[in-house]
Length: 184
Figure 1 (cartoon, rainbow, N blue to C red):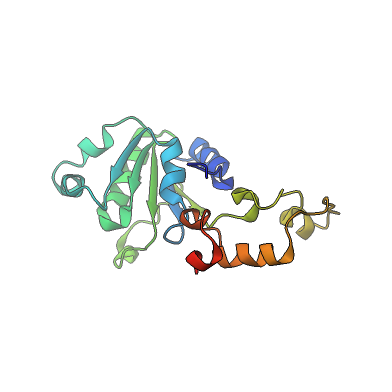
Figure 2: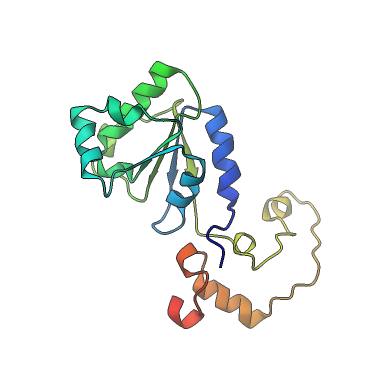
């Protein structure tokens, strides 16, 4: 099994970083947010496991921002104050692609945070598609179908039972190499 499966979100994140100061990647736990963000980040601050980094947000936040960009603030919701710090830095520096925030939960006091409009873009990440996991060719585009475009694909090698097994296993990166019984 490969260490990393390329994701559709890889290109979407790169595009957003070229157009805005910071990007929030949100989505369910275990869908690959941190791994995807880590591919583009030059610096990583793990707010879930680094007590020193959490303390610095209140004591000396500038030290967290004095790193090579883009800086990934992983599990940002653990220290919600980082949101306004990121927004302020984007305003002050007036540059793009500075920060990436990842997290699976919204802080309980989120209503007090600035929206981040114009400074922090959002990328919603979901579990892997069959195309991303290598279980489909991706020849048929749902977007094209919805746009009324005719779609044709070669006959698939995946049987109906195999497809049902893939549905049960799902697109969670940690389960891709597991069998159906283990995934359940």
